[in-house]
Image (cartoon, rainbow, N blue to C red; front, side, top):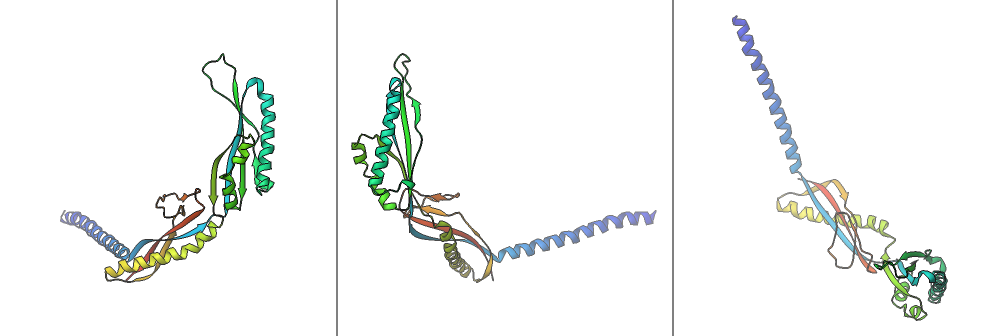
Length: 242
């Protein structure tokens, strides 16, 4: 009976002792990991540069409002308006290959009085894609001569793009990392440490902004309203410090 009692005491004691050893090993490992984390400094670096848009997209539309009995003549008028539009664009040096004109879209004008004659709006859109940014911008701002010819034309949008963005993003990455290194060095020196090497780096989204803008987004921003733009690149870098 004494032997059994001893075994009954010894076995739980062994289990308790083994658990304590495992716990101490786990705590020690945790302390090592925490200590390792203390030797890593993560900062975000960024850089900006200005670029000039090298592509432009100009979208406009022309239309006619006609009664249902005038639909046939309305379509004929739209055809003449299209010819005048193309003529105007060519006169201003726009290549016909840069011009895309949609088919005629027709929509009924809503009228609460169903007894009145039905009216329709006939509409076509035109899109010009060009690398001659300044020329297209000037034409878009001076369409009065086209309107004087009887064409009901209006600009829908005028958008500017920079086609070399993928390469520029790569070129700016080094500058952003260098900025992160400078920031990390200042932070480390304030704590009596020095940065040794880069542990990891991840690039953030690219921001294409209007000049001096601070309206950035977590998902990236692309301003299309200005010819001159600022491209901003960020990078998150983790440094080993000692």
